Length: 428
Image 1 (tube, rainbow, N blue to C red):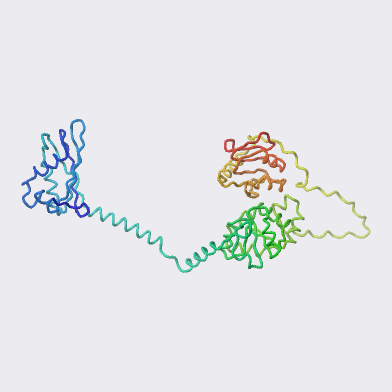
Image 2: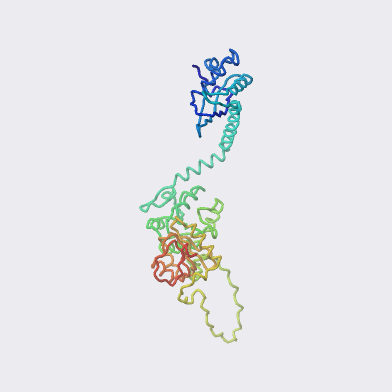
Protein backbone atom coordinates (compact mmCIF):
# COMPACT_ATOMS: atom_id res chain seq x y z
CA UNK A 1 0.00 0.00 0.00
CA UNK A 2 1.35 3.41 -0.96
CA UNK A 3 2.24 6.03 1.59
CA UNK A 4 2.39 9.79 1.50
CA UNK A 5 5.23 11.42 3.33
CA UNK A 6 4.17 13.98 5.96
CA UNK A 7 6.73 16.28 4.35
CA UNK A 8 4.94 16.21 0.96
CA UNK A 9 1.38 16.49 2.34
CA UNK A 10 -0.47 19.76 1.92
CA UNK A 11 -3.17 19.29 4.59
CA UNK A 12 -3.52 17.46 7.89
CA UNK A 13 -7.02 16.33 9.01
CA UNK A 14 -7.31 16.06 12.81
CA UNK A 15 -10.40 14.43 14.33
CA UNK A 16 -11.39 13.38 17.84
CA UNK A 17 -13.07 10.03 18.55
CA UNK A 18 -15.27 9.00 21.49
CA UNK A 19 -16.25 5.31 21.79
CA UNK A 20 -18.66 3.83 24.35
CA UNK A 21 -16.64 0.72 24.92
CA UNK A 22 -13.17 -0.79 24.57
CA UNK A 23 -11.76 -1.16 21.06
CA UNK A 24 -8.31 -1.48 19.51
CA UNK A 25 -6.61 0.65 16.89
CA UNK A 26 -7.18 -1.85 14.03
CA UNK A 27 -10.93 -1.74 14.81
CA UNK A 28 -10.97 2.05 14.26
CA UNK A 29 -8.98 1.90 11.00
CA UNK A 30 -11.19 -0.94 9.71
CA UNK A 31 -14.33 1.06 10.48
CA UNK A 32 -12.93 4.10 8.64
CA UNK A 33 -12.24 2.16 5.45
CA UNK A 34 -15.31 -0.08 5.70
CA UNK A 35 -17.98 2.51 6.51
CA UNK A 36 -16.73 5.07 3.94
CA UNK A 37 -16.44 2.52 1.14
CA UNK A 38 -18.62 3.53 -1.84
CA UNK A 39 -19.75 6.66 -0.01
CA UNK A 40 -17.77 9.21 -2.05
CA UNK A 41 -17.52 7.50 -5.42
CA UNK A 42 -14.58 5.84 -7.14
CA UNK A 43 -12.46 9.02 -7.31
CA UNK A 44 -12.50 9.56 -3.52
CA UNK A 45 -12.34 5.94 -2.38
CA UNK A 46 -9.99 5.98 0.64
CA UNK A 47 -8.26 2.72 -0.27
CA UNK A 48 -7.53 3.93 -3.80
CA UNK A 49 -6.43 7.36 -2.56
CA UNK A 50 -4.01 5.75 -0.13
CA UNK A 51 -2.74 3.30 -2.74
CA UNK A 52 -2.00 6.19 -5.14
CA UNK A 53 -0.30 8.22 -2.40
CA UNK A 54 -2.84 11.06 -2.27
CA UNK A 55 -3.89 10.08 1.27
CA UNK A 56 -1.16 9.20 3.71
CA UNK A 57 -0.96 6.67 6.52
CA UNK A 58 -3.90 7.13 8.88
CA UNK A 59 -2.67 7.47 12.47
CA UNK A 60 -5.00 6.47 15.32
CA UNK A 61 -4.19 6.94 19.03
CA UNK A 62 -6.72 5.42 21.43
CA UNK A 63 -6.72 5.64 25.22
CA UNK A 64 -9.08 3.51 27.31
CA UNK A 65 -10.40 4.76 30.65
CA UNK A 66 -13.33 3.58 32.79
CA UNK A 67 -14.59 1.23 30.08
CA UNK A 68 -14.62 3.92 27.38
CA UNK A 69 -12.15 4.81 24.66
CA UNK A 70 -11.08 8.23 23.46
CA UNK A 71 -8.51 9.16 20.90
CA UNK A 72 -7.29 11.17 17.95
CA UNK A 73 -7.31 10.42 14.24
CA UNK A 74 -4.72 12.10 11.94
CA UNK A 75 -5.04 11.87 8.15
CA UNK A 76 -2.38 13.47 5.86
CA UNK A 77 -3.73 14.63 2.49
CA UNK A 78 -2.26 15.93 -0.76
CA UNK A 79 -5.72 16.49 -2.29
CA UNK A 80 -7.01 20.00 -2.91
CA UNK A 81 -8.96 21.95 -0.30
CA UNK A 82 -12.42 20.79 -1.42
CA UNK A 83 -11.52 17.11 -1.70
CA UNK A 84 -9.71 17.16 1.67
CA UNK A 85 -12.77 18.73 3.30
CA UNK A 86 -15.00 16.02 1.78
CA UNK A 87 -12.76 13.27 3.15
CA UNK A 88 -12.82 14.93 6.58
CA UNK A 89 -16.61 15.19 6.56
CA UNK A 90 -16.87 11.52 5.50
CA UNK A 91 -15.14 10.49 8.73
CA UNK A 92 -18.00 11.95 10.77
CA UNK A 93 -20.54 9.51 9.26
CA UNK A 94 -18.97 6.68 11.25
CA UNK A 95 -21.27 5.98 14.20
CA UNK A 96 -20.22 2.52 15.25
CA UNK A 97 -16.87 0.82 15.72
CA UNK A 98 -17.00 -2.89 16.38
CA UNK A 99 -19.85 -3.56 18.83
CA UNK A 100 -19.67 -0.03 20.32
CA UNK A 101 -21.28 3.25 19.48
CA UNK A 102 -18.80 5.90 18.39
CA UNK A 103 -18.68 9.58 17.53
CA UNK A 104 -16.02 11.19 15.33
CA UNK A 105 -15.66 14.99 15.07
CA UNK A 106 -13.15 16.78 12.81
CA UNK A 107 -11.45 19.38 14.99
CA UNK A 108 -9.11 20.97 12.47
CA UNK A 109 -7.82 20.85 8.92
CA UNK A 110 -4.35 22.39 8.95
CA UNK A 111 -2.72 23.84 5.87
CA UNK A 112 0.82 22.56 6.24
CA UNK A 113 2.10 25.16 3.79
CA UNK A 114 1.03 27.98 6.16
CA UNK A 115 3.08 26.41 8.94
CA UNK A 116 6.01 26.04 6.58
CA UNK A 117 5.58 29.62 5.42
CA UNK A 118 5.58 30.85 9.03
CA UNK A 119 8.74 28.85 9.68
CA UNK A 120 10.39 30.29 6.59
CA UNK A 121 9.57 33.85 7.68
CA UNK A 122 10.85 33.38 11.24
CA UNK A 123 13.98 31.62 10.06
CA UNK A 124 14.60 34.35 7.49
CA UNK A 125 14.41 36.94 10.28
CA UNK A 126 17.00 35.02 12.30
CA UNK A 127 19.33 34.69 9.32
CA UNK A 128 19.00 38.39 8.47
CA UNK A 129 19.72 39.41 12.05
CA UNK A 130 22.76 37.14 12.16
CA UNK A 131 23.99 38.56 8.86
CA UNK A 132 23.59 42.14 10.12
CA UNK A 133 25.34 41.35 13.41
CA UNK A 134 28.25 39.77 11.56
CA UNK A 135 28.61 42.50 8.97
CA UNK A 136 32.25 43.19 8.33
CA UNK A 137 33.54 46.37 10.02
CA UNK A 138 35.25 49.10 8.08
CA UNK A 139 38.95 48.86 7.29
CA UNK A 140 40.05 50.96 10.26
CA UNK A 141 38.21 48.70 12.70
CA UNK A 142 39.75 45.64 11.04
CA UNK A 143 43.23 47.15 11.29
CA UNK A 144 42.75 48.12 14.94
CA UNK A 145 41.43 44.67 15.87
CA UNK A 146 44.30 42.87 14.13
CA UNK A 147 46.90 45.20 15.63
CA UNK A 148 45.47 44.79 19.13
CA UNK A 149 45.37 40.99 18.90
CA UNK A 150 48.98 40.91 17.67
CA UNK A 151 50.10 43.14 20.54
CA UNK A 152 48.34 40.94 23.08
CA UNK A 153 49.96 37.86 21.58
CA UNK A 154 53.37 39.51 21.90
CA UNK A 155 53.41 39.38 25.72
CA UNK A 156 56.31 37.26 26.96
CA UNK A 157 57.70 35.84 30.20
CA UNK A 158 61.00 37.46 31.08
CA UNK A 159 63.86 36.24 33.23
CA UNK A 160 64.15 33.60 35.91
CA UNK A 161 61.01 34.86 37.64
CA UNK A 162 59.02 34.60 34.35
CA UNK A 163 57.69 38.14 34.73
CA UNK A 164 55.05 39.35 32.22
CA UNK A 165 56.79 41.69 29.77
CA UNK A 166 56.62 43.21 26.32
CA UNK A 167 58.80 41.83 23.49
CA UNK A 168 61.15 44.84 23.37
CA UNK A 169 62.67 44.62 26.86
CA UNK A 170 66.13 43.49 25.74
CA UNK A 171 66.58 45.77 22.72
CA UNK A 172 65.06 48.89 24.29
CA UNK A 173 67.30 51.40 26.11
CA UNK A 174 64.39 52.40 28.36
CA UNK A 175 61.92 50.17 30.21
CA UNK A 176 58.64 50.85 32.01
CA UNK A 177 58.13 49.01 35.30
CA UNK A 178 54.45 48.36 36.13
CA UNK A 179 52.61 46.37 38.77
CA UNK A 180 50.92 43.44 37.01
CA UNK A 181 50.24 41.50 33.80
CA UNK A 182 47.08 43.50 33.00
CA UNK A 183 49.15 46.71 33.02
CA UNK A 184 51.60 45.21 30.52
CA UNK A 185 48.71 44.13 28.27
CA UNK A 186 47.19 47.62 28.30
CA UNK A 187 50.53 49.22 27.40
CA UNK A 188 51.02 46.65 24.62
CA UNK A 189 47.56 47.43 23.28
CA UNK A 190 48.51 51.09 23.08
CA UNK A 191 51.89 50.53 21.41
CA UNK A 192 54.35 50.31 24.35
CA UNK A 193 56.41 47.11 24.02
CA UNK A 194 59.04 47.85 26.67
CA UNK A 195 56.95 47.29 29.84
CA UNK A 196 57.66 44.68 32.50
CA UNK A 197 55.55 43.77 35.56
CA UNK A 198 56.75 43.27 39.14
CA UNK A 199 53.90 40.89 40.07
CA UNK A 200 53.65 42.23 43.62
CA UNK A 201 54.99 44.92 45.90
CA UNK A 202 58.40 43.29 46.44
CA UNK A 203 61.02 43.96 43.81
CA UNK A 204 62.23 40.83 41.93
CA UNK A 205 66.02 40.52 41.35
CA UNK A 206 65.61 40.72 37.58
CA UNK A 207 63.99 44.16 37.93
CA UNK A 208 66.94 45.35 40.03
CA UNK A 209 69.33 43.99 37.41
CA UNK A 210 67.51 45.75 34.56
CA UNK A 211 67.38 49.02 36.51
CA UNK A 212 71.19 49.06 36.63
CA UNK A 213 71.52 48.53 32.87
CA UNK A 214 68.71 50.62 31.42
CA UNK A 215 66.84 53.88 31.93
CA UNK A 216 63.80 52.97 34.00
CA UNK A 217 60.39 54.57 34.50
CA UNK A 218 58.22 53.33 37.36
CA UNK A 219 54.56 53.59 36.28
CA UNK A 220 52.16 52.59 39.08
CA UNK A 221 48.47 52.81 39.98
CA UNK A 222 47.05 55.97 41.54
CA UNK A 223 46.49 54.40 44.95
CA UNK A 224 48.39 53.63 48.12
CA UNK A 225 49.69 50.35 46.76
CA UNK A 226 51.42 52.28 43.99
CA UNK A 227 53.11 54.47 46.60
CA UNK A 228 54.45 51.38 48.36
CA UNK A 229 56.00 50.13 45.13
CA UNK A 230 57.63 53.52 44.54
CA UNK A 231 59.14 53.44 48.02
CA UNK A 232 60.36 49.87 47.53
CA UNK A 233 62.05 50.64 44.20
CA UNK A 234 63.57 53.88 45.44
CA UNK A 235 65.10 51.99 48.36
CA UNK A 236 66.40 48.98 46.43
CA UNK A 237 66.74 49.79 42.72
CA UNK A 238 68.45 52.35 40.50
CA UNK A 239 65.33 54.06 39.18
CA UNK A 240 65.54 57.11 36.90
CA UNK A 241 61.95 58.38 36.65
CA UNK A 242 58.64 57.95 38.46
CA UNK A 243 55.05 58.54 37.33
CA UNK A 244 51.57 57.50 38.45
CA UNK A 245 48.10 56.94 37.03
CA UNK A 246 45.47 59.55 37.99
CA UNK A 247 44.14 59.25 41.54
CA UNK A 248 41.84 56.25 41.95
CA UNK A 249 42.73 54.76 38.55
CA UNK A 250 44.83 51.76 37.62
CA UNK A 251 47.31 51.55 34.75
CA UNK A 252 45.35 48.67 33.20
CA UNK A 253 42.27 50.90 32.66
CA UNK A 254 43.98 54.00 31.23
CA UNK A 255 43.34 55.20 27.70
CA UNK A 256 46.14 55.89 25.24
CA UNK A 257 45.88 59.61 25.89
CA UNK A 258 46.07 59.13 29.67
CA UNK A 259 49.12 56.87 29.30
CA UNK A 260 50.98 59.45 27.19
CA UNK A 261 50.02 62.22 29.61
CA UNK A 262 51.28 60.25 32.61
CA UNK A 263 54.58 59.40 30.92
CA UNK A 264 55.10 63.03 29.91
CA UNK A 265 54.51 64.05 33.55
CA UNK A 266 57.23 61.76 34.95
CA UNK A 267 59.63 63.22 37.51
CA UNK A 268 63.22 62.32 38.30
CA UNK A 269 64.12 60.00 41.14
CA UNK A 270 65.92 62.87 42.90
CA UNK A 271 62.75 64.93 42.93
CA UNK A 272 60.78 61.91 44.15
CA UNK A 273 63.21 61.39 47.03
CA UNK A 274 62.96 65.07 48.00
CA UNK A 275 59.19 64.87 48.02
CA UNK A 276 59.26 61.70 50.09
CA UNK A 277 61.65 63.25 52.58
CA UNK A 278 59.67 66.49 52.85
CA UNK A 279 56.49 64.70 53.94
CA UNK A 280 55.88 62.63 57.03
CA UNK A 281 55.44 58.89 56.62
CA UNK A 282 51.67 58.65 56.37
CA UNK A 283 51.32 61.75 54.22
CA UNK A 284 53.98 60.66 51.76
CA UNK A 285 52.16 57.39 51.24
CA UNK A 286 48.89 59.12 50.47
CA UNK A 287 50.21 61.87 48.22
CA UNK A 288 53.78 61.21 47.16
CA UNK A 289 55.74 63.61 44.99
CA UNK A 290 53.22 66.46 45.16
CA UNK A 291 54.94 69.77 44.48
CA UNK A 292 54.27 71.96 47.47
CA UNK A 293 53.74 75.70 46.85
CA UNK A 294 56.68 77.84 47.90
CA UNK A 295 55.89 80.02 50.92
CA UNK A 296 56.62 83.75 50.47
CA UNK A 297 59.71 84.98 52.25
CA UNK A 298 59.09 86.82 55.52
CA UNK A 299 59.95 90.54 55.47
CA UNK A 300 63.39 91.19 56.84
CA UNK A 301 63.67 92.96 60.22
CA UNK A 302 65.89 95.96 60.92
CA UNK A 303 69.40 95.22 62.11
CA UNK A 304 68.84 96.90 65.48
CA UNK A 305 65.88 94.71 66.33
CA UNK A 306 66.64 92.13 68.97
CA UNK A 307 66.88 88.58 67.69
CA UNK A 308 63.67 86.72 68.10
CA UNK A 309 63.59 83.92 70.65
CA UNK A 310 63.28 80.53 68.98
CA UNK A 311 59.84 79.11 69.33
CA UNK A 312 58.96 75.51 69.85
CA UNK A 313 58.07 73.70 66.65
CA UNK A 314 54.75 71.91 67.06
CA UNK A 315 54.91 68.18 66.44
CA UNK A 316 52.76 67.21 63.43
CA UNK A 317 49.67 65.25 64.39
CA UNK A 318 50.81 62.26 62.36
CA UNK A 319 54.10 62.14 64.33
CA UNK A 320 52.50 62.13 67.77
CA UNK A 321 52.52 58.72 69.44
CA UNK A 322 49.38 56.80 68.64
CA UNK A 323 47.26 55.58 71.55
CA UNK A 324 47.13 51.87 72.07
CA UNK A 325 44.12 50.61 70.12
CA UNK A 326 41.34 49.14 72.14
CA UNK A 327 38.71 46.64 71.08
CA UNK A 328 35.69 48.34 69.59
CA UNK A 329 32.15 47.05 69.80
CA UNK A 330 30.41 45.84 66.65
CA UNK A 331 27.56 48.13 67.63
CA UNK A 332 29.89 51.08 66.94
CA UNK A 333 29.57 50.35 63.23
CA UNK A 334 27.57 52.94 61.35
CA UNK A 335 25.04 51.97 58.69
CA UNK A 336 27.37 53.31 56.02
CA UNK A 337 30.27 51.23 57.36
CA UNK A 338 28.18 48.05 57.48
CA UNK A 339 27.02 48.56 53.90
CA UNK A 340 30.50 49.44 52.65
CA UNK A 341 32.23 46.55 54.44
CA UNK A 342 29.62 44.03 53.31
CA UNK A 343 29.66 45.05 49.64
CA UNK A 344 33.47 45.19 49.45
CA UNK A 345 33.83 41.79 51.14
CA UNK A 346 31.34 40.27 48.69
CA UNK A 347 33.26 41.75 45.77
CA UNK A 348 36.49 40.10 46.98
CA UNK A 349 35.10 36.55 47.03
CA UNK A 350 37.44 34.26 45.09
CA UNK A 351 40.13 36.94 44.50
CA UNK A 352 42.33 36.31 47.56
CA UNK A 353 42.81 40.08 47.67
CA UNK A 354 42.68 42.67 50.44
CA UNK A 355 41.46 46.28 50.60
CA UNK A 356 42.96 48.89 52.95
CA UNK A 357 40.60 51.75 53.93
CA UNK A 358 41.22 55.05 55.68
CA UNK A 359 38.94 56.75 58.24
CA UNK A 360 36.82 58.22 55.40
CA UNK A 361 36.32 54.71 53.97
CA UNK A 362 38.43 55.59 50.94
CA UNK A 363 40.45 52.76 49.40
CA UNK A 364 44.11 53.33 50.16
CA UNK A 365 45.19 50.34 48.16
CA UNK A 366 44.55 46.74 47.16
CA UNK A 367 47.15 44.03 47.77
CA UNK A 368 47.23 40.21 47.59
CA UNK A 369 46.20 38.59 50.86
CA UNK A 370 49.62 36.90 51.06
CA UNK A 371 51.25 40.37 51.26
CA UNK A 372 48.78 41.91 53.72
CA UNK A 373 50.90 41.44 56.86
CA UNK A 374 54.08 42.89 55.30
CA UNK A 375 52.08 45.82 53.88
CA UNK A 376 50.59 46.66 57.28
CA UNK A 377 54.04 46.48 58.88
CA UNK A 378 55.43 48.93 56.31
CA UNK A 379 52.52 51.36 56.70
CA UNK A 380 52.47 51.34 60.51
CA UNK A 381 49.55 53.85 60.64
CA UNK A 382 46.76 55.52 58.70
CA UNK A 383 44.71 52.35 58.05
CA UNK A 384 41.21 52.32 59.55
CA UNK A 385 39.92 48.97 58.25
CA UNK A 386 41.23 45.93 56.41
CA UNK A 387 38.89 43.82 54.26
CA UNK A 388 40.16 40.59 52.71
CA UNK A 389 39.15 37.28 51.15
CA UNK A 390 40.59 34.91 53.72
CA UNK A 391 40.60 33.81 57.35
CA UNK A 392 41.70 36.21 60.09
CA UNK A 393 44.30 34.65 62.39
CA UNK A 394 46.33 35.82 65.36
CA UNK A 395 49.24 36.98 63.15
CA UNK A 396 47.06 39.29 61.06
CA UNK A 397 45.29 40.50 64.20
CA UNK A 398 48.56 41.39 65.98
CA UNK A 399 50.02 43.18 62.95
CA UNK A 400 46.75 45.11 62.43
CA UNK A 401 46.71 46.13 66.10
CA UNK A 402 50.27 47.44 65.87
CA UNK A 403 49.31 49.45 62.76
CA UNK A 404 46.34 51.07 64.55
CA UNK A 405 43.68 49.25 62.51
CA UNK A 406 40.20 49.39 64.07
CA UNK A 407 38.31 46.78 62.02
CA UNK A 408 39.30 43.52 60.33
CA UNK A 409 36.64 42.22 57.92
CA UNK A 410 37.27 38.64 56.79
CA UNK A 411 35.42 35.59 55.51
CA UNK A 412 36.19 33.65 58.71
CA UNK A 413 38.03 34.23 61.98
CA UNK A 414 40.31 32.05 64.10
CA UNK A 415 41.44 34.85 66.40
CA UNK A 416 41.33 33.99 70.11
CA UNK A 417 41.76 37.48 71.58
CA UNK A 418 42.27 40.73 69.74
CA UNK A 419 42.50 44.45 70.28
CA UNK A 420 40.99 44.84 66.80
CA UNK A 421 37.30 44.23 66.10
CA UNK A 422 36.93 41.15 63.86
CA UNK A 423 33.93 41.14 61.53
CA UNK A 424 32.67 38.29 59.35
CA UNK A 425 29.64 38.02 57.00
CA UNK A 426 27.54 36.72 59.88
CA UNK A 427 28.35 39.69 62.13
CA UNK A 428 28.20 42.62 59.71
